[in-house]
Length: 231
Image 1 (cartoon, rainbow, N blue to C red):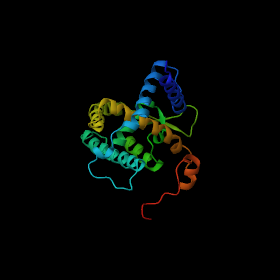
Image 2: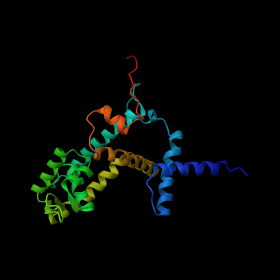
Image 3: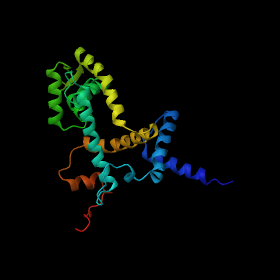
Image 4: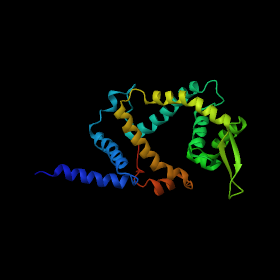
């Protein structure tokens, strides 16, 4: 009997366990392995992105640069759609909504916890929090053991505004998925979750002074000898 397929599966399972966070739930682990396997084995057979692009890509573009570009574009698309979704509410931006949702789902949170959870620099996050406080959507309370810290929670008005916004924002989420099939959505969700799990500790840690210092500390696999064609 040919056990080559079993051997491949064992090797892939070992690779999965090196990449993935451990879980005590066998059913959840199997589902996660299935998503991982789809992303892992689907890469080789994925259609060329040139078949779906809206304009020809530049010869200098790499897969990595395309990822960075289109992740940025996706945020801008979402920001545009969410402005319409939040019309006639006290919420001005998608960030206002995401801060309220984070406090509701994970709170009470300190200001620094809320800002870090939303991947913002302190000045930007502080301005969003000031806006929500001024609108009466969140409130501050003393920390039980640390008098220097205050914890944020939703006010009754904040809960009402958040719950009313959920319906429109769920439509925005569906719009963001665009024309992706259900399987493609699962694959993209897995890949973005993996990237977030990789980058969050880098963002949350003390910031290196230079790009080179950051590269050496967190991204040693990134080459330093890149030059544009014809340079």
